[in-house]
Every structure is written in structure tokens, then in C-alpha cells.
Amino acid sequence: MNNCFYELERRCTQYRRKKNIKSLAFGAIVGVFLMAIAFYAGVFNERLVSENGDSEVVFENEESENIDDGYIAQVTDEIMNEELGQPENIELNSEATKEVEEIIEEEIKDNTTIDSKVVDIEQVTSKEVKVVEKKILFLEPNISLDLLKNKIYKKPTLVTKKIDDPIINMKKEFTVSHSIETALLIAQHYYDKGDFKSSLKWAIEASKINAKAPKPWIMYARAKAKSGDEAIAIKALQTYLSEFYSDEASLLLDELKSIKR
Amino acid sequence: MRNYAEAKKLFEDRLGTSAYFDSISAEVTRKKLTDSIKDAQNSLTFLLGKSGQGKSFLINYLYTTLSSELFFLLISHPVSSEHELLTLLYKKLSNEDSSRYDLSDLRDAVLNLYGSKKHIIFIDEAQILDIELLERIRILSDSKSLRFVLVMHEDEGEEILSKPHFKTRRKRTIHLHNLHTNEVERYVQQTFITNAQGEVGSMFTSKYTEQISKLSGGNFRYIKRLVYTILELLEYAKEEGIVRYQGLNSCILTMAALDIGLIDE
Image 1 (spheres, one colour):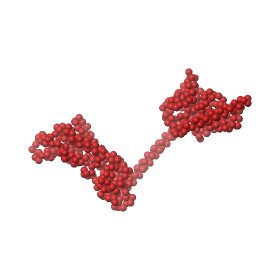
Image 2 (cartoon, one colour):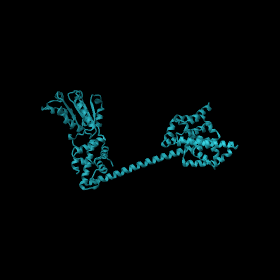
Image 3 (cartoon, rainbow over the protein chains, first blue to last red):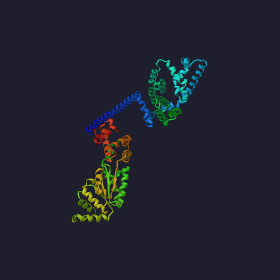
Image 4 (cartoon, helix red, strand yellow):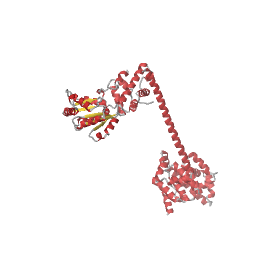
């Protein structure tokens, strides 16, 4: 038994060592595999964003299935919190809108042009500019489509012209903050400049951050419609509305439908 | 004080019926087998199970419980021909010399003897019987005068049963299964406690009985061998004063499994 016992002990140690190596090797393989997946997912994602053509594929192919796989599956507590935060944003923007309107009215009374006073708005009323930076006025659901076309809506664009290459700053900010607001601001910037392809790209980028938010979809639909693809714009809105509720998206959908007719 | 020498004896591979363990599988099989034996219409039963699952143990247990109700004959050694089998059966019930009969007369004599008597004939390890002899047993059982239970290893038994002459005939097949993990724990603990070895039994916690179950696959024979070897190793470690093995641990368990070949290096 003496030899047998120690022989068994030696075999046991050897066996357990082998087992541990196997476990480690398995863990390493799984780790490498996961890293490879993550790497390729990252590369694929980059390509998807960088290629404009792909942006259409994302929306055109999805219907309900791709929403689940692509974006809706990413809905988390964070998204819920973001959603719950919306009423506060609306209030802020309503106030901001009113304030901007008041300034415009004052300017009209003074017989001065709105454009000439844009600089003043930026310089004097830092509060308004602050609000504009914080939240995007023209994409909030409480603002009607008519309001989107008026001067208040155009103001931020004019203000941003005063800053040195604002789009670079916004993109830099986006790389840091990765916020939906910044993505939408960039999308809106391109939209205003008539670069609808870039606008689409940034709308998609925004939708990746929050799949449930209506604004990226609306931005996308508007850019698509402007590009002449009303059918895709309608399809995108219908896809979104089949999953979520948004007055603004519904209004835009109705409007696009009526234009198409 | 842990008495490993006494404790390990409880797990020796013996056929003592006092240590019958009422596992779910064993209980179900026992009930089915008892019903099958008592059913006059059923004269041929197959009891199938893997090696070490407790088939022989169960037969012995039934022998002790049913032998008062009926004539219980257990044939546990190999029989090579129908004549040998009939001679054996004849001698069990008659004192007369069977050599005066030829095969046909001997068959009639056996059928007469057993036809009038409530009986059951168990043939253990029946998978080693010649296929022709098995066919003869089937024919004898068709007469309803002789009633058999053929105990076989699962794989070979399934193969025999799939043959046309057995497949189409009326018979009953009962399978014996392995123990579940929780049954392994209950078996080990019950064995220790009922034999005043609770202190040794307390080392076999759920963690270790789960490992024993996993290594043995719930097979009775492997469980017993594994626990026996564990206790043997612990006994040696105690005698030699090897401090690191003064109680059950994973290493001792692995050593035991390696020793009896349940683990390949």
C-alpha cells in the first residue's frame, strides 16, 4: 500500500495539473474567440457607419426583425432612464423656445434683422446658447413641423457659423461623450447644409445610442425624404411606429404620405 | 474516533440482502418484477440492467421475500443445453433419476412437475446462454407450465430481444436504472448511519457524494468500490500519520477514482 499510496498521489497531482491546464487552455480559447468576435464586430460596425450605402441597408432591410437584433435589443435600464428624462427636456426646450421667440420679437420691434442680431444672442444671452448646447431645440417632440421651418429652428445653424469649424468640435465632442444629442446635432448640421448622406449617417449613429428614441428616426426620415427617397422615409417611420409611439413621428409620417400622394 | 477499517467493510462487494437500498429505480423494478411473477399470463420476463446496477442483488432480495409464497429457483451458473437445463429443473423437484428419460420425455416430465406448482425460475447472466437454448426456453415458457425470468446485461439483452423470434412474442421487459445523485448521498449516509459509522459518514458531504455520483455514473458497484477505496486510503493515511489526508478531500477522491479506473490520466 505504501508505494501504491504515493504512486496514486503522484498520479492524482499529475491528473489535476493536466485538468487545470485543460481548463486554462479552454478558457484562453474562449477568451480569444470572444475577443475576435468583438474585434470583427467593431470593424463591421465601423464599416457600417463609414459607408453611406450601408446606412440604407440598415433601415431598408430591418422591418421589425432588424430593430430587435440591431438596436432594440440594446434597450437597457440606461435607456429607460433616458426615456424617463424626456419630460424635463421638453420643459427646458419650451422655456428656451419662448425665450428665443421673445428675443426675436424684441428685435423686430427694434426694426433690426434677426440675422444681424444673432451674434448678440450668442454674446449677450449666454443662457440661450447654453440651452441650445444642452438640448437640441428643433428635434424635440413638442415642436411642430411648422416650427421646424421657421427662423427659430434655423437660428442654431446661424450661431454655429460664428464658431471656428463647429462640426469638427461637435465630432470631437461626440467621440468623448457619445451622446445622442451631439449625434443629432451633427446630423442636423449636415441636413441644414444639404449633405443628406452625412445626415443619414449621423442619424443612424444616434439611433444606435438609443433605439427607442424617435428623434434619430425622424431625422433619418427627413433626410431620406429630402434625398428623394420618400418611400424609404415612410417605411422607416412605419417600422419605428410599429414598435414605439411618437406624435412627432406620426405627424411626419402623415405629412410624408400626403406629399407622396 | 473514525474506524475506517470497520466502515469500509460496509462497502465490500457482497450479496447480502440486508443492505437492500430502496432507491426509486430499485423499488420500481422490484414492484414490476413482483407483479410480473404473480401474473399467471406472463411466463417470460426479461430483467435488463448494466453491469453493477444491482440485478443480482435484487434477485437475491426477491428470493428472500418471495420464496415463502412460491417455489423460487435461481440458476446462477451457465447452462449449455436444453437437456442440462431440464435435468437441473427435474432434480430440483424430484428425487428420481432423470437419466432414464430421453430429451422429449424429460421435457414432458419437467412440464408435468412444474405445471402443477407455483414457481418462478430465475436465470442470472442469461446473455451468455446460447441463442438456441434461449429459443428453447422461450418455447418452454410458451407452454405456460414453466415460468422464467431471464436476467441479462442491458446491451446484450437488447440485442437478443431485437431478434425476430423474441421481438414478436409475448414477454415482459423490465429495466433497472442507475441511482440519482441525491440517492447516492442517501445511500452512502444511510449505510454509514445504520451501521454506527456516522462519524465517518459525516465526511461524505453533498459536495463529495455529488462527485462520487458523477464519477460512478450512479452505478451501485462503482459507488461501493469508490467509497471502499476512499476508506482504504484514509485508513492507510491515518495509520502512517500522513497529516494532509486525515480527512476526505478531493485529492483522496481522485486517487480512489484513479485506482479503480474511473478516471483516465
